[in-house]
Image (cartoon, rainbow, N blue to C red; front, side, top):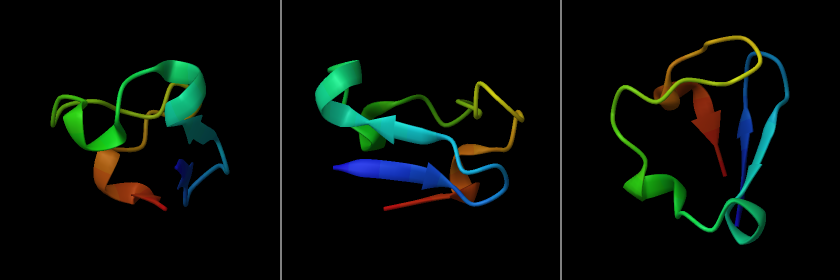
Length: 42
């Protein structure tokens, strides 16, 4: 599954990153714009 940051459009691809998005720490933030995890959608 691919999760997209609703602020900047960064895409987190679970197949590439090898870690399911739901398992990332709650304090994870977008590596591009630093938006919180809650701003990403699948």
